[in-house]
Length: 359
Image 1 (spheres, one colour):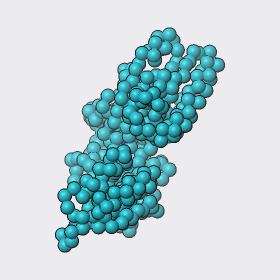
Image 2: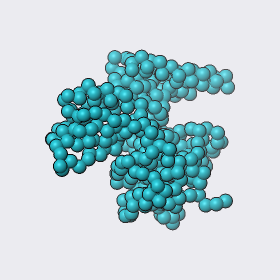
Image 3: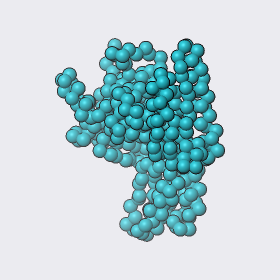
Image 4: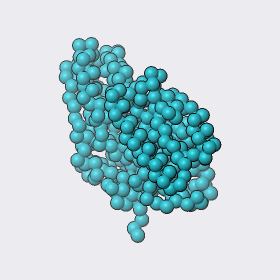
């Protein structure tokens, strides 16, 4: 993992150096910096490091000299001065973290889409672009499969109060009228809706994630501590477990435990559990990678009943079987067969009234 970080961090270093050269050729002074040169300190969890602190002294000195600073995203250094990376989409987190420590008015994220949509427009042609969305809804959407922003970047923006604007790299924004989607606090969004006399949508968006894998640990002893013996070693290995189901075991002294992990962590998860088979006491492990997670997200469901019922009924009418369910205050997620992903997202998008009006 350490050597992978050393390797993967070079892509950003090439990019920032070329960017600095291009800006210099246009007659401006630019300087590129790696995460370590900036002073981004992280923990030592290679490939998934977390930012501990950022020194702003060097950046501020360069800015005061009139230099344009180009920072390599996605990377930092740990206490041993080893290069670390922040995980997939980590450049978003770098951008938000720098905006926070420098006190920027806004953090603009340029990407290959025009903003945040009610669903993936490649799957749902009738998906609508959102002008604004609050941190909490964006955090849930990012965590359940919306790939526009990294989950950690949204969480950091919410914690630090950084206003984030998601924009297309191909648009020509002006200072007065930025396109894209603005990510703000719930209070700011409510105030704007009140000002424009618009009612808040019950469901803000629908996300899907095909990078899930299902694990079934069979015939686990039904006793206190058994489930902890499964999930503690996975947590120690920084593997994120999502949906969890434990079968009822009234008539036996054993139970089956089903849960999902990121597909990339499946092999490692199985190895960790197999190494502790005697300690846990399970019979065998069954895995399935042909699954997808579908989620509906919206702050409006806090005060409205029937959101989950609508989801279950809509999927049932199309013959789509639900394999697992998880919920939060503003989200309902289900696990289904991967082949039914597109159909599920489209019918739910229509069922919740999210389709864009016909032109």
